[in-house]
Image (cartoon, rainbow, N blue to C red; front, side, top):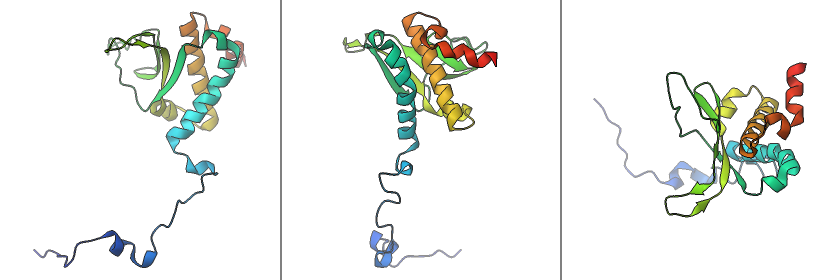
Length: 164
């Protein structure tokens, strides 16, 4: 067996000889391609939440919105996939969760928050418009659960899509 040996260690100078490596960012910060998928998703969530917040702002002042990559929760009963009311799921995969206000491990008070799971939501959307609609619907259901009302009360246009 023949092994190749290097006579000198590889340095960054030898990899990008004569300054021909990437000299700067590929896209300027002003272009949408500069943002990561996670940053784009965060902006999408804020945009989907804005009309809900505009209508219910007085009752949502103690509610936070958060995004996680993937869910870290499991179904109560994996065989029947029985989720509690505060979880919006597509079968066995949770899409979001409402975490009620409470006390953390250190004894500090925590605020209620809706946690959206980015990857499961992105996988279920066919295109960017579908993702926007899906995120909006999930937020409406979670805000309705938080407020203790039906989703149609939070967004009266929610039922109109089903009639067509």
